[in-house]
Amino acid sequence: MSRRVVCLRHGQTLWNAEHRFQGHSDISLDETGIAQAARAASLLASLRPSMIVSSDLRRAFDTASALGRLAGLDVAVDKDLRERGGGEWEGLTRQEISAGWPLEYAAWDAPGGEHVFDVAERVSSSIRRWAAELDPDGLLVVASHGAAIRLGVARLLGLPEELWSALGGLGNCSWSVLEEGRRGWRLLEHNAGTLPEPIQSDDSPEATQP
Figure 1 (cartoon, rainbow, N blue to C red):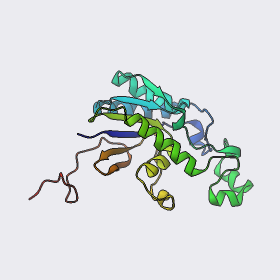
Figure 2 (figure 1 turned 60 degrees about the vertical axis):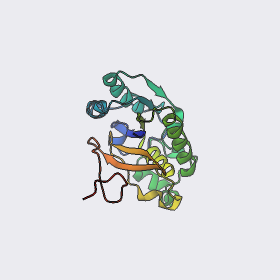
Figure 3 (figure 1 turned 90 degrees about the vertical axis):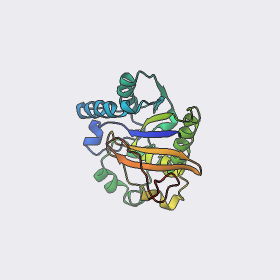
Figure 4 (figure 1 turned 90 degrees about the horizontal axis):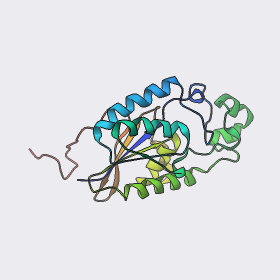
């Protein structure tokens, strides 16, 4: 029996479709995003989550609410699960950003935006805080944002900052699954769109022996 966390990225928005930097801008789900949230909810509800917590931005909260309705759970809100702040880049496309800030674009460091370490720290701390309220076999669903989840998961796993980019991004309404093991948190699935399956392998003490 172990605690698990599903980190769910929000559904598509118009700005996603237009490849605009969203950051803290409060953009709603579009029709595709609403359908994506409904599909994700239908799958994740079968896992019988114990708790659902969301970023305060509506694209994440509406995604979480679709699951909450099926699972019969209220959705808690935590501002620490917000996306990385984009400063002067919010609302701009990658082409506009690269043209206006070529050096900053190369480093992906928005003027007036948040540093990746600060995002990783607040998101991972939020996940730890909410997971601590779970029963030993509980499941927490965290509805958040692409960069926020990637950075928070990397920090939660204890990866050094220079390796954070080794974790790829998440598609809209895809998720990552974390499990609390004897030596801390471990990543079971990343950028998934299907339900997690039990794993038995030779590097696990729970593996079935021949």
